[in-house]
Image (cartoon, rainbow, N blue to C red):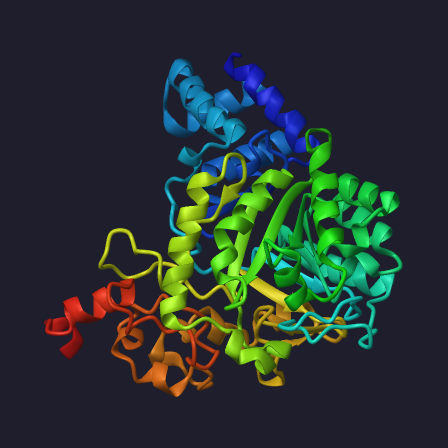
Length: 468
């Protein structure tokens, strides 16, 4: 395929809504909504402004010959060199390979004008009452966003070019207008993720069809390799329904757009089942398996004993590595905050806290929070039904999460736990463990022999850097 044909192909893909991009100062953000490679679907990358300009030109249907002429005039190059440069850029963009990550390969290292993801809680109602639910959702919490309210939220997200829409609850698939909501989200070009407990999909062909047509990625919770373990967390009668839902979505996955992601919350009860959970998820035909340690917020505060100890956190990491080696088809994320080795160690992590920088959470009543786990009133940034999202993200508290939570000198809200503020690792910018706004009862890994933070602490303890 010659360069002009590649450009015409890019035009068609841009017209069909495959790419979602946002221009920033000195760089850009691109998200690929539909990829032939499941592991790059929904994958966002940082790129240079030249690639953003090329996408804009394709969107405007600027003729190929005019683009070549523009490049010749702008860079003083021959037609041959202009076409060679254009061919290379088009090939990477259309192929969407990992090479395209250059020149910004780090995970969210820069401040951006808006988050990349908005978790929108369209209802607080849930048919289950899972033991660790961070949102305290259940059958007796029955708030719903109206369809008009949802459209208002979508308008605000569109204005700021926030590409990823994470539809949550409660149980979002039980919203009475879920079909209209998901269709509108897809029509707007969002990368649509739905987080579900999976049970509403059980033998519900209408709901399955809605998901397959409008959802880019569905995240289904599975918390055990056995019925007893899963239902310990999720409730009686849920296991078979979840297995059915995953299996039936995966059965014809080559004929629908939806990526099937299975998620596990790791506690003491299911820790040693992790390799078997990975094996089960692989056998069911899911595309990806993700996980996270149980966090003691919401109803999770009442089962703190289920939380992992530091040693169990390390054990979880090794069990995940063990299970992933046996996985044939499912993609397994092989990192766990505070445990996964830094590359190359010892070094300062480049990633900022994801709250506000990467994501925000919008409650059913319109309240906006930095992330899904920080839901106390002291973290409230504003209300999207009362103020514009642009103004909310310009508030002092939002700015604090963009900068101050990673910079002790700017910790004017004092939300970071006192023990963290006194820690030399935090003061020097080396902390890469869990949320700094959650008490350090469980997850600071500085004291685990051999952990990244422990290596950093011991190797630099005697160095001059700590004394400055």
